[in-house]
Length: 355
Ligand SMILES: Cc1cc2nc3c(=O)[nH]c(=O)nc-3n(C[C@H](O)[C@H](O)[C@H](O)COP(=O)(O)OP(=O)(O)OC[C@H]3O[C@@H](n4cnc5c(N)ncnc54)[C@H](O)[C@@H]3O)c2cc1C
Image (cartoon, rainbow, N blue to C red; front, side, top):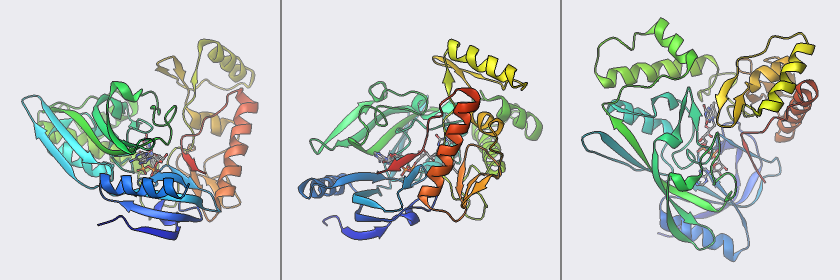
């Protein structure tokens, strides 16, 4: 069956922040053939393309998207295991958290701390999703994609994806070039959870005893439940009944400061008479919590302008409380300016603006 291409489709309904005008053209792709066909259609009509998964990290402009939106719908999961490993291979349109749940139930370790992150499997490598001390790059073995330039399928090993903190080649040098149709994750069979994040460790120590003898599945389930509870308390799971639901999660990334930048930051903090926040070691410097910078620059949780708000539970998330995309972008710019003027740090955005 040829892929169905619809016209003037409202996009807000496909995003968690629930913003944006219509797409000129819209195709839901259920197979690699659908993707190739939709891409060929866009080429022949000289249309821009935007690939859409669960829309949990995407903001469309109020005027919409003047091109073809490809919604990923491949929904299969296969798993195979040998003595020490379980391999999950999932279609690009599979809901990420379904994959995590499946892995946890099978006693396969490696992605349990990534429980509750909204979105799809196909998007998981794009910004190398991460939370509570885990990043998906550590379990991705390979992925399949369609190259928009050749309309041919290609396979990438994890090393070829050039992963970094909330980064990959698909978000940098090759942004927009590949449509990811399938990802294979290599998980540890019967592996115990690795708790690297102090907040999670503390929570587990108080709430649950993960060191209590038990089978791996029980331990992984405990970690998953703890992560979900923590995420709920910060409105960081997608729950339509939550007043902070309409967001893209963290709007900004935590800045990584070089030793020189760190010195400059420390002296600014001292001059302001503030107490330094805890930093975390990162590949090439120290990671500073962006939420702290935002609050200390004067944008408290709940700060609202024209219906665009800082989440009442987490200063990193900007929430649509009855606003437009322009209002969210204005608020983001105001926060960026405030943090730059107060601390000399430029915040980088995590979410994707589809233009
Ligand atoms: C409440 C909430 C909490 C969140 N918490 C976290 C968190 O803890 N950690 C974290 O890392 N992220 C988090 N996010 C952000 C988001 O969930 C992730 O970035 C997720 O991977 C996005 O998936 P998606 O399918 O919704 O992607 P979309 O928003 O649809 O797309 C995101 C980007 O990926 C591209 N893309 C999507 N699918 C494909 C594909 N198949 N092939 C090629 N390109 C594609 C899009 O073009 C776009 O550039 C959170 C978001 C929300 C709303």
